[in-house]
Image (cartoon, rainbow, N blue to C red; front, side, top):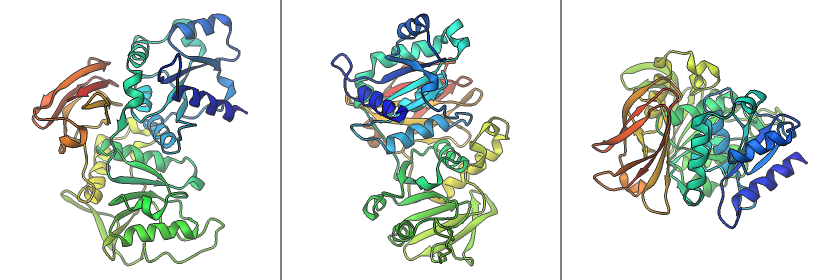
Length: 397
């Protein structure tokens, strides 16, 4: 019943509210919400108010959980049931990530303390900005790179998914999340490179899709283990893609440390990594681990796929941000930048401006920011000064 309600609210948000497109915003209040709490939520700009206990609360402990869940929701969305991200913390980074990924709406989990003291100035300001830009946001189109992140529904949500997604994002990629269970060979043929987080089992038909993908010339990166058995545990032979005698794969970019094994598959390449890709990018450990560990994983990603799957946005090597571009119906692009760390300064290069419908010299307008974050054109890209945990929304032209 609760799931049906979620679909109904998402569909309601996708089409029209007061005869115009809307980005649905829900307040999830402590149970039971009283009349005063409902009135406050309405005043803060929420379209719908309901008890948080109506649904199971997802976990957003990891830095990229909100962004990954929004991307997964969009990958499974339809016109009737667009993506709706529930249970978000009242944090600008989580909200901006979900909106940038194309969620048709979101629900904020508001606890008793927030209802007593109010939402932060940044969240209230962001709400107002979203309301004034709903038409453009709901009509914009996300810019994705030719890199697939392959997810198998039988695995469910597990840390290696978020870690892989997080390191791809921080390396500058905006991957397309692909459901392996329903994707066809033709769907996969669009991608010159694919990342596959594996839990060691697949059905035979899905394994066949990976074989065809690689035979056609794609680069397939599998981690942290090859597939060796079917879903019911029956073993089957998969050494065509992951042979035990494949040559070592190093991190590249100045280091020869072996991280996996590579194998030529006709015109394609299959790589199996010995460790979870992006392991430092999942869970609260993200904020505790040394920056060098995270940088090494970003370098590994680039060494494996950048040659066959160029990036639309290329952050400087030491810049660790999430940047998502959306083509605007008004021309140019909207760029959403999220910093999950302390203050950072650096340049985001734009190697192919035509992919963003922008020209040279680049025109830039700041639309929304927190933590005194700023940006300015810099050669073939954008120089950003991101405050701690800051976000930026820019218009590029």
